[in-house]
Amino acid sequence: MGTDASTVERGFDTARAVADAILYEGYLLYPYRRSSVKNKIRWQFGVLVPPGWAQAHGLDDTSVAGSAESWWQQSEFLLRADDDARLSLRLRFLHLQRREAEELTADGAFRPAGRLDAGSHEELTFDEAAPRQFDVEATVGDLLRGGERPGIEVPGWQEMTAVSDGCGRLAGRVRRRRSPLHLAMAVSAARCEGAIPSVRVRVRVENAEQAADPAAPREVILAQSALATHLLAAVDSGSFISLLDPPQWAAADARACVNVHAFPVLAGECDDVLLSAPVLLYDHPRVSPQSPQDLHDATEIDEILSLRTLTLTDAEKREARATDERAARIVDRVDAMSREVMAGLHGTLRDAGGVRAETRRPVRAAPADDGPVVVVVAVAGTPVGRGSRVRLHPRRHGTDAQDMFLEGRTGRVAAVLTDLDGERRLAVTLDDDPAAELDEWYGRFRYFSPDEVEPLSAGPPVPQDSTGPPPAGRRAWTTS
Image 1 (cartoon, one colour):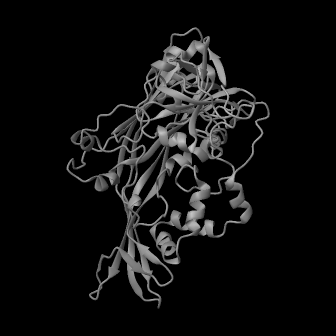
Image 2: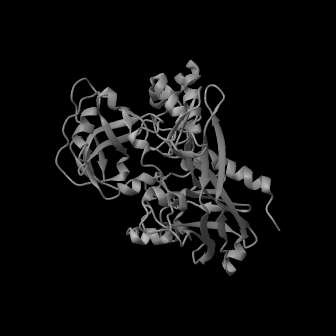
């Protein structure tokens, strides 16, 4: 019995915007030109290289970080479903495509040129990428009984496109070619012995290319690699369990999940879709609705990137358009962007409607009399205020993936503030952050609830200005 394809697609559609942002994260960076130094070293996330090349270069890291290149990637996640529930998996990655400009010689042959003048535009030698996806379906029972091991073969490909000069004469051609890829995928499942029945699913993806030259440079080996590799999963009658914020009964099983070069988070509205990505995300990530296009930088700084793109000279824009079709679309869209769309990028006021946000919230100064005052909160019976040292234990019941890097670190409280819901927050600088003094000068802090810190110093807090941190710094460290 198969799953209705339209149902699966609707489930994957809920995560598609974020998954596409992962697919093209860092693909091409501002100023979107081939000549830019930052665009000479590309493909930084989810790169699965041939195993022989990985071993020759000592790539044996087994951390979660997907920016570390490897020949394999593993996702483990928890699922509540009956044996007849069907699990749909979609592996997605980019396939490098070489684009080479070749000029016509006097004897009718073609030779590499790097650049071709086509009159109204230019053609440049540059690496593109083609998106790939492969689907696997199986019932939970099938996976428990033995699993699936599909091989993934991507054939090589080549295409020639003639290029004419401004007078309509043949000037050269553009050659596009892709090398074949050989990947392997292993999907298995095991029951968890918890108070409530659940299943742990493991998906391991490997680069199975055996003929790669171990001495080849990275730019050559990328043609035999899967890039920006990530996984979508959907279940037709069941739900996934958060690994970041698991229920108490599943906490031990969540900690036992081993994820290497990828990490799975909930992505569907009903916890029936999951995204395992080579970058750390929180549960239910989403792209801001104000973002008009993909700028290949996770939409974090749409406004400044759009404004900077507007400042490019005509010659720079011409080179960007010749560098890559996606770069050309960025330049064209920014040039045509309306004032209303640009204004929407500047800032949006959202009403939480009584629902607590899962990211560090903006804060304002606690009401106080004019002048310096001592503002404190009691934590485990100890008064904590400006100057107090604390140990961080963030997100006891939250889903900010970045907080795992703050667990156990120490810091100093810069101010006690009140958030927009009227709750107290501690503005903290980290002891081991080399930029701590600069951040405090700018007013950039990390914000924590009193129950997310452990007091380390019992000395009396010092007065803080009633206005709190400098106005320019009244913002929280956030991943949204």
